[in-house]
Image (cartoon, rainbow, N blue to C red; front, side):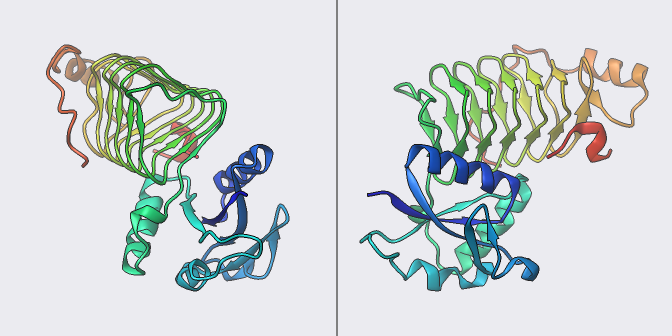
Length: 254
């Protein structure tokens, strides 16, 4: 018997999760919740949009026919900031962390010593080597590589094809565009954006958008950016691994 699942935010990511759980039978999606009134009463890929986020307590109290299990919840907004805002609302509505599902593609090996937080989504082709830690509500898109001792903090998003060297730290709410690469022992700051195909060789400050090869801040003249990178701490500098704290076209945001 599969576990019932409510998907919050009727997004492309939600449809990817729906396809995954249907194919592998890990959960039964009973509906979407979304604040877009135009979607209410419609169906997406055959699954009903049940109503707004505020109605979640009613749906959590109802056991779908054929099961004794209460539904689990998964927040499927593509951006970490949007997921964080939704989770804050769910907290106010009394949804505890124990109600969140973890969705990991069955083909993804999770070795001993790796940990995936509640509410996180890990799609097909992802590789975790050893001692990789994903926080809560992290999204890892297909064919992403996370090598030894990487830490991805809460609400971060790794798009398809991202590659992290050993002991990389991805800060809370950071967004790494498709095929971005990060050198070992480097930190991506909280709420930072790293553009598609970027190669990050030095720590990226919180909240900044960087792109390019090697990656540097957008909107800064090339010579100035290069000087700042050359004088930054090198990749062997100590990294804090405990803190949980341009346009979309340019940086390849989802």
